[in-house]
Length: 389
Image 1: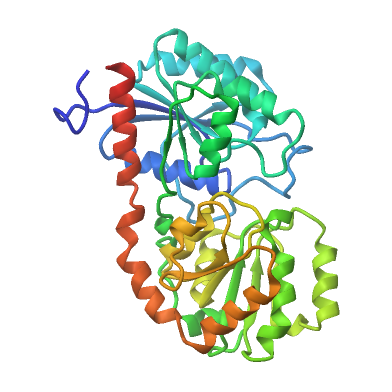
Image 2 (image 1 turned 90 degrees about the horizontal axis):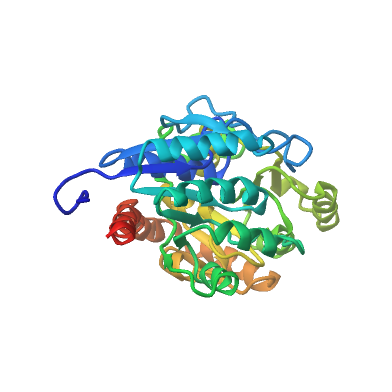
């Protein structure tokens, strides 16, 4: 069958993954992906009726509170606790006769439903592509490798967004065909509302309009390294009167971080927003910030970097995973060793004292095309062509 880019024919693509009303980076990624694919292809998105049972979800609520959420056309079908819905989803995919099925993979909780769906469609000759955000969970359990291998073995090809994820996949499935691509741009979230001038955004947050602001954004989990950022703050504050915004729901003991803030005496320089914020609120926080700080201890890649770039904000982060490929040291941000409080303090101080925001912002805006969704679309075209000959 000829396809878009060869004779102009459209592909028929089925996608299984989360979208609005569910919240989070995977949901946003899937919504943006389907929106871009729909410009050139026929796309059917089969989303979730339920994402997780309430007792299993670590956050307060898995629904997106945004008034202007990212949305796309979809059919809510899949319930992880209802095996009948797995079979129904698989049969619906088969019925549309797609050229390709894309399954979003990020947590082994979905191993049984996704393995069942993939098995159903493969028996009818439909190629299965796993788009792997995380091959294994960040906090791996003994059973995760068994579940991941069971589900992923039903895929024909795979896309990962970091070298380490590709290597991890190869250890599970040595013969797997693996493609790597950088995380595409999340700039669309910056367009939910017009970004505010920094002074106006800071006033809205109750901050002094001229005060330098650093932003930590996203769920708070051990691997995010927030404690090292807090421990760096006294040294930074001795030279720059910066305010730190911590915006994201705590998925581990908040009290530990409050104790650190209290012991260091930095309470007046730190604001904590312990919840998942709407897209509209995110615009305000990113507009207020001069720099986004991601002091990760261990990570392969981060959608927050692409979100920061979408707002034209430089990033200070650590030399872990593929962040070195995405954040160019002294061009779009600063890179420091992980778990190094002194280096993090020096980078923050240098950023503000040397007024690096504007020159870095100009470089970030000039590089936006490097993270276009077009690169992923072309890769998917090639995979579908190869899969069906």
